[in-house]
Length: 210
Image 1 (cartoon, rainbow, N blue to C red):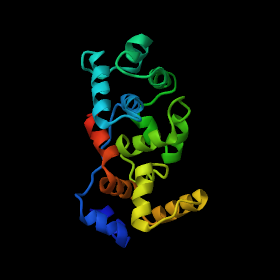
Image 2 (cartoon, rainbow, N blue to C red):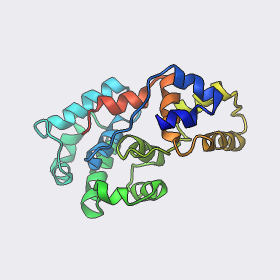
Image 3 (tube, rainbow, N blue to C red):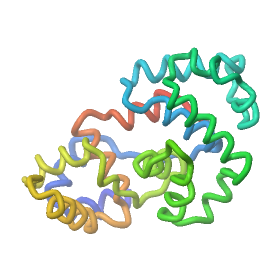
């Protein structure tokens, strides 16, 4: 695969790549549901997030709901599947935004990464990291670097012997290393996660979002 040849120029990353299987990115059609599921799963284990997501689908007889159906579900009913008040509100915000501003994949595909981030972080409750995960796991973008992800940071500290005592310099070092991986930074992140604990990868697969 082309990305393997490119990333293997980094000798330290090459060692990780040789120890794991090649990755393939997938595109999802229902961006609204992906974003709602991402919000629901934040700060939860993969197992608990899976339970809550299935309860969510259960409110709609196991089917993926439309944004309007999400809005029509009473707040307390949505809260009752195990969501906090804040997360319930954020899920409603996503559905409202999808209806009023649009969130279809064709619209997002016309935007570059930073434009998608700027567009979707306008939703209260949606941060940059969440949209970066969406870019990787829902839009299949190949050149995304999740610089604020703790798993990525910890892996790079170990592999590249970085010092995080000076945060400004630390972030500069992270970015400088990642630039060598472009235009395949997403794949580099996948291999770094796989070395660490696989959590974002497992979460994306576990939710089984189409």
